[in-house]
Image (tube, rainbow, N blue to C red; front, side, top):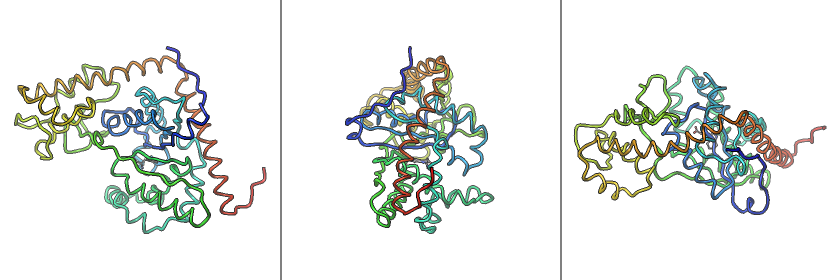
Length: 350
Ligand code: TRP
C-alpha cells in the first residue's frame, strides 16, 4: 500500500464540523484497555469532527515513572494510534511538547486559576496519597496544563474518561473567567464521556484497571500487537470465578466474567440482553472466553495489518508527527497571539 500524502484539507466542510481535542500520556505499546477506553472512540469521532489528538509528554512528567523510556513510549504510542486507524490527513496528531506555545498559555492561565480549586480536586488528592514524596508544583498545575491544551486548539468537544470530568469543568471555568476578564477569546468545550467500554479490567486481576505496569503478570493485558495465539492464551487464562452463570453483574466476586462480557459488548456492539441470551446455551466459561478471544483477534487483525504497512514505510511516523506539529503550531500561535493582544502585552519585536 502507498501511504497517502499529508495535505490538510481545508475549506467550509471542516469549519462546520466542529473540533475535538483529546490527549493521552505516552505509555508506549497500547493494549485493549487503551483501545476500548480511548482509541476506538478517537477513531469513530473522525467521521464527524476534525480531530486533534495529542500525546501529552509534558503531562507525563508529573509521574516520573513515565519518563523512563519517554522517547520510545511516545513514538510507539503514535505508531499504535496510526495502526488503530487514526487518519492523519484530515486530522492532527502531534506530540504536545513539539508545540511549546502550550507552556506559555499554561503560565497565563495559571494566573486566573484559584489555587484552592486545584488542591480540592480528587485527582490531586489521590496523587498526593500515591506519591507523598513527590508532590511537585507541576502536579498541582496539571489540570491547568490540560486546560491550556484544550483551549489553545479551540476544541468544541473533548472525549475523556469519567475520571477527567472535573478537569473539563475546571477548563470551562478558567475559559469563562478569562473571557469575562479580557473579552471573548476561548471556545467553551463540552465533555464527551463514553457510555461503555470505558474501563477494561486486568485479565489476571479483574479488580484493577488494565494498565501497563511492571508488577503485573504477562497475562494481565492483551496488546494491540499481540499475535493471535498469544492474545487467545491470555484470554483463556483470564481469572473468573467458580460459578457458571454468564451474565453482566456488579458483584465484585464476578468481576472477571463481567469484564469479559464488557469486552465482548464493546467489540460486537450487541445489546446486553442479546449477549446474555447468546451465552445462555454455553457450557461454561471456556465457551465465553473462546468467543471473546475470537472477537478480540478479529478486531486486532486490521490493526496489525496496518501496523505492518506503516513500519514498512520508512519515516512515515516521523513525517506524520512533523506535519502534525506544524499544523497544531499554526493554530496554537494564532490563539496565543489573540490572548496576548487581549491581555495587552506589548507586541514582540520581530
Ligand atoms: N489529563 C488526561 C489524562 O490523564 C490527559 C490529557 C492531557 C488530556 N491533556 C488533555 C485529555 C487534553 C483531554 C484533553 O488522561
